[in-house]
Image (spheres, rainbow, N blue to C red):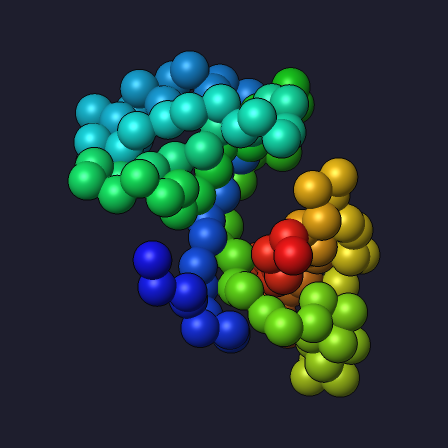
Length: 123
């Protein structure tokens, strides 16, 4: 397995209040395959046909105003990237957090308000 380069888009997420419909839509449209994330409740992992490593996820939400589609960039240091975001004229929308399995992520916005995620994989 090839390890993705830092500072590249390596994950995407679709947030929806209708996860079954999202799985059906993206499965029908692109042939994506879905599996429940064993580490996170309310999250499905997305794999492409012929690829056994997930490349994205479906985040379940109860509030339709939380529906979204975004890309996530793998970085070496989430906190440093948040600081550089602000120095470059963007803002930190959701401060850095660490999941129970050690993945660290934050959501940031560019100067136009476009939100995207940055993350460092679990060790």
